Length: 225
Image 1 (tube, rainbow, N blue to C red):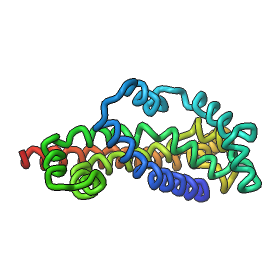
Image 2 (image 1 turned 90 degrees about the horizontal axis):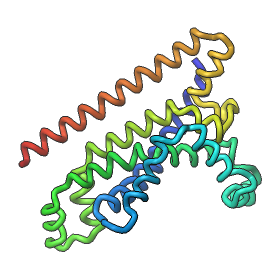
Image 3 (image 1 turned 180 degrees about the vertical axis):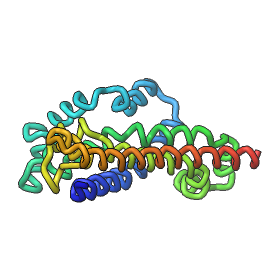
Image 4 (image 1 turned 90 degrees about the vertical axis):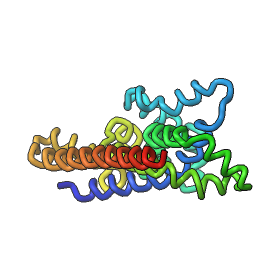
C-alpha cells in the first residue's frame, strides 16, 4: 500500500469537497431558480467534464494553468513557482473536473423544493440568504450528501486529469490512482490489486450511501405530503 499516495488522495478529495460544496450550492440554486437566455448552454458547460475525455480536459487545463497563461504567471509571481505539477494546481483541476458531480445533485434537490414553500418564506419576510439557511439547506440534505460523496469518490479515482496537470511527483501530486498505474507498470500486481480493491470498496459504499440517503429523503418527503 502506497500510504503517501493514499493520504495525498484523501487530502485532495477533502479539499475539493470543501471548496465545491459551498460553490455548488450557490451555482445550483441559481440554475434551479432562474430562467435566462442560453441557460441550457451554461448548464452544458458545467456538465462538460462528464463527457469530455479526461486527457482532453487535462490538456486544456494544462495549457490554461501553465507558465505561459495569465493564471500561471500570476501564481508564479505570487509564490515563486509554477501552478502546474503542484498540489495547488492539482486542486484547481480537481475542482473543475468535479463540477458536475457537485452541481447536478444539488440543482435537482433545489428544483424539488415546492414553490409554495419558497413563497411562504418570502411572505414571512425572510431574505434570500435567510431562506437558504433556514429553509432550503435543510430540505436539500440528501442532495448535499450525494454531492459530497460523489465528489469525494470521483476525486479519489480520477487518473487522466490528475496525471496531465500534476504529473506523478511522490508526496506532491502522486495520487492513489497514479500509484496503481505505476505498480502495474512495475509488475507489482499484488500492490496494485490491494489499492484497486480499496477504491472499489469505497466506491460501492459511496454509491450505496447516496442511494440510502435518496430513499430516506423520498420517504420523508412522501410522508410530509
